[in-house]
Length: 283
Length: 327
Ligand SMILES: Nc1ncnc2c1ncn2[C@@H]1O[C@H](COP(=O)(O)OP(=O)(O)O)[C@@H](O)[C@H]1O
Ligand SMILES: [Mg+2]
Image (tube, rainbow over the protein chains, first blue to last red):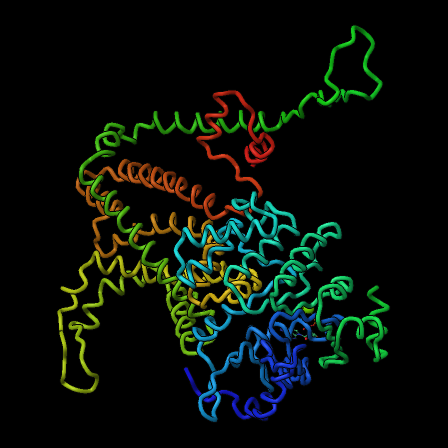
């Protein structure tokens, strides 16, 4: 299965990754970013949806992605765990190229098993929850640890109950998703992602499908995760959450990063008129 | 037609005030007179049909009672059941395999599965049965070796390798696999795309995703038509009489060619087929219930639960029971 992939386009400017990779942190020590994307491009049938996205997230950081609908936020998130393959540029998580293996000077496409192994380290929470409807809340959480990680059933179950407790749903372990409210389902989905001990968590508009009064519970869980030092990339329209929890806010539009920086700068003093217009429309 | 007395309407008829719990709705239930009329007509029809059959002098009733539990008939019943079970099980496995091949993005697999379904669904089952039965005429020897050389690993006489029973089983299984493949495929297509994404995002491999996430959900859609297919299969086994497999129908025709009681034996056989197809709906009911879990907010009670509840005179889920009775 390992044929030379689209190596030529991916292999450009390896040196820049390294230089982009090491930014000094608050203490002046160089940290490797956990997630780094470099000039990521992606097209659907000739229409370029991502036009060279470059960004980096350090361990423990929370990055919020804002942007109007159709700007490519979901697509970018899906590229990070290789649900979509990129057409150009490169993405690496934890120092490993996503979806490709680099040996010497050549880049090889990974086979499905290697991709699956890589995805274990990257959790994802979806707008529409996507819980497995035929499994109970607890089974949703333990399915991958038992089946993929081969953790013993009892340990996985204990851990699952612990995670359910952490998202405030310990009493609903035996409920099926259809018996849970949207907010509860989303919290189970977060617990499911956490069960694989990911180093990075991706959230694609996790509260957009929820009734307003249920949004708070989910955001609370996410804030706790952020405070516990989880590295997260969050696509959201919740400006309040971004202001309070994000270390970096990135504003995307038309497949490019328009503006990025600390929330105080991007949200309160946007430089680009496009960012300003978007923020006005959301608030 | 119905006068509903809703409490609190303030229009309670004059007279001695009845103590009514204001939380209860006291209403005369909706009547369904046409159901009763239709039922009576049907009952009359069936009874008169039964009487006419019973009093028909051309039917020799002792023959029916004599042969219904005849050992030869019973052995035919057993073989019919065996053929149905084996053919359904093996064809289901093949069907899943074909469906997965058909949905894979491997063009070779894809084409192969398409060709299979095209060929086996496009020709009559009867012809396929005869074909497998007469394979010995087409290839008298079946051997395995390296093509275009004289090197052979083994070589057997076709009629030894494929006796009538095997030929029949092969025909039923291979034909059914084509239909099952399409049923499984439509079941898999009914599973939401987001399920794949969620499974992949927690690191499940495509194969694991198929067995743990996609197929269990597809089952809900697959089981009802598969129940149909099983019933068809049970009856299609009778086609194997053309290659003299000793299943129920073949045995019956053999007996009736001796005692010339064709109609009686057909009635015997029909009773058995009816009985077997009725029995088949029980596992289907429970399979549907099992794979429907998590779908309905609460599962409907099983017939046994209903019966027990009725005996205890505690109304359960009357709404659902009512709507099912109406159908
Ligand atoms: N599978 C796909 N096929 C074709 N076009 C797509 C597909 N997924 C997304 N797009 C297009 O890509 C653009 C960006 O979509 P998306 O990443 O979902 O935006 P956002 O999440 O920011 O709203 C949209 O114009 C959308 O129509
Ligand atoms: Mg989106």
